[in-house]
Length: 462
Length: 137
Image (tube, rainbow over all chains, first blue to last red; front, side, top):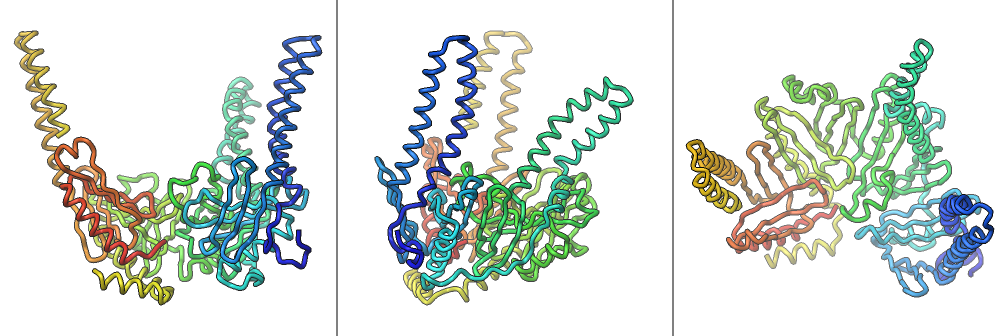
């Protein structure tokens, strides 16, 4: 292992010796959860018989020891190196595996530190690359300092700079105060409604114990699930801060498990501004981001939190607008008056009519939907994959139609619902034409001589 | 075509049933089935007529649906890959379906019932213009 002055990752090296401990910690906890009830059960079955317990104890101890050894061996045979053009990881004892991740295709480098790792001062580096999403390069675990150095080197090489270029300095844009996060999260409908019911139930309980008990017993499980969800989200979004580096946005968040993530600007497919009903008096908004991913790959394995990422969990309107301006310049969330659907749409969508709105400018398409919580999707024209016009029988009777804007994002699509039929018809062509112009505009400055050459060659052959 | 496969045996069965029962009211059964066949035939014909596609300079337009109408506009530069599929029934009649895929999962640009040769031609044409105008994500 090189000393501190040798650049991280230039030579073959192992992961941190304590990484099997972190990894093993989880397995051990899992085993204990299974083992203890099993042991208890076996004791209950044969009261007084000492040997069966002892036997099963041995079996479980052997299992634990085996997984410990397996963890140690897997650490022993794993080594990694950052080459000039790729990240190389070699692992596996029986099935030797050599992973090469070309740095030119690296999309983002995240640092994730679960609780156990943080206690030991370790962190995992995750390399997210384009193409098949399954082959994330994971370096788990390195010391925190090493992880930062490795990330800087990976990012520098990915951007085609000298390997010892320091990471671009991140300018803090916005951070969320934790008390506000708690209040905001508990005001979301998932918990506010059951809580209200529970309070009502307690009141009823005082008046007539019998009816109250029934109401309370039905609302309590819902309330508990709500609290658990809030606690989990809080854990994920604790100490949330957004900063901007040259290559994209940096997100730092997490209570037990700290994450440091990068979202490259170019990968953002759409943004969504969400306002739950109870946030309206406070004027709070939530900003979410949708990034491109190969569909069908790895969706189930990846937790949904990472798919549609939160850009800012809760912030005041002007803060959100400021952040929005950094990510999507010139974008606004105020609907012009003509963005409202015609009044007859009330018949088709009585519960969401008050939220519906859609409009577009020269750079972005906006679509607002929602029944209880208002959600505005903002998609840049140059990211549009296809445009669809659709109308059902009832809508046609009312001379209405929907315009769908498809982006490569995963979570939500921009749907311009219940527009006037004629308007929707012209919008489809207009948005397609504008998207084409936007794509050309974007393609031109970025195009390198090499690709232009190949383009010319293509047209020459054609 | 599937229609014929479903309704012809049904009709035959109904006639046989009518002969077996041989009651006055049994005549109704084949008549009802025949009416159903005519009705669904006309619906299918409408659906068939509603399908349409147009290749424009920069994008492909696919239109479909009778009750729920859809029109999709897919720019050539956004196409990721093109599928040509032919099921067993399709193959009997020498037809194929061309489907376009973009990076968005919601895109549904499917052109069914093309003649096999036409489908292959369309695919090749789309692939070549797609290559010339590809812009990535």
